[in-house]
Image (cartoon, rainbow, N blue to C red; front, side, top):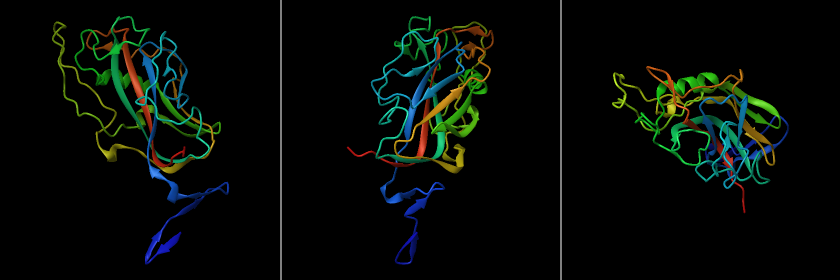
Length: 251
């Protein structure tokens, strides 16, 4: 703690392991990583922050052809860890969802994923039933140096931003009622869960985010109401965002 005139400013933090962090080097810059989940997957886990732009995007094993990651999918400097000049205090974790479909209608090749799913006019905003099935089935873990530092049901991690939806009808299906599109929580900053104790990830420290399906049962979020007819080309793209104070790597 230092004093500038009569104003007290926090300039350093001493961590429990003795490391001292100089806050003057930090900025508010989030980092993110994306996973592709195809309906019907039975993977027990999918790990994020494990690739950089130009690598294949993390995807469930029922996807035969993976996308090549762009800066929209991830902005991390290196995979599976912080760079040698990088630190981060994670104060909140947000998850953004979009729903897509494959043009070939079979789902296993998602390189041609589009906003067009047969008989659905709501994409890329997920149907709320599909999002609820996906969230209920999944657990979230943040692992740092091979230790789980935070875990929760996936549904606890609100997005806190995004478009505000309204009911959407599906006129191509006879006698189908209005279907509601969904967002993970309110589109508002106060919807975001703040960590009571921020998670610190230090220089060259290994970390990852893990979305777990603890039962390893098939997660069939691609069912639609009212007939629950399975749409085997329904894809949820989940972008996990770590928000907080970030010491940016220098070139």
